[in-house]
Length: 194
Image (cartoon, rainbow, N blue to C red; front, side, top):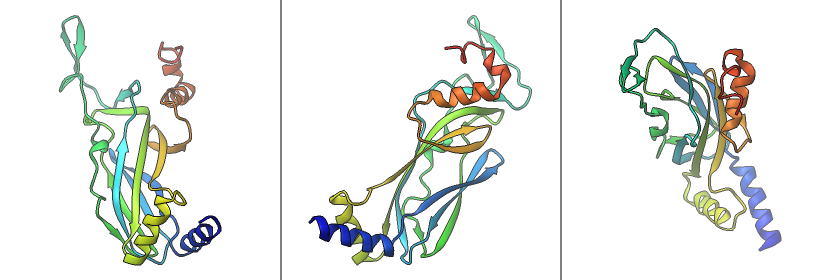
């Protein structure tokens, strides 16, 4: 299978290039990304997932809020637990992207509180695409089965002040290190001295 598989994989890559995910810009509390299909074949997004690895939360308030005293601590409006709406995004699943086309889309906010902005966090985006054409789809599945192509693409981003920066770091603490380096108010706290 060696040489023949390599030739098929090379020819296939020439015909159907990898799809690219590009961060465009923040849009209010949301984010605009593009999925770029440079190949001459239509593709189907089989799966698009965003995950938030376990990590300490670094956030700031974007407007004045009033916290209530409760059981020796403070409680912010709506409670001290917030959700991460961006991890619930599945709207691209099953979407077709035409050949040589760019599909722009909006990702939801990083957190459910309109008065909180994450200062630094790590997010992982994983997506899987297949050609819409039956023959190319069969070749694609075969190449993925014999590990000559990745089944899915995974990207890791550090989000700092609403800007998405690709990273190879496996540690969520890299986001904290960057936030501490860039913000002298944070660098004085115990989060940065751990």
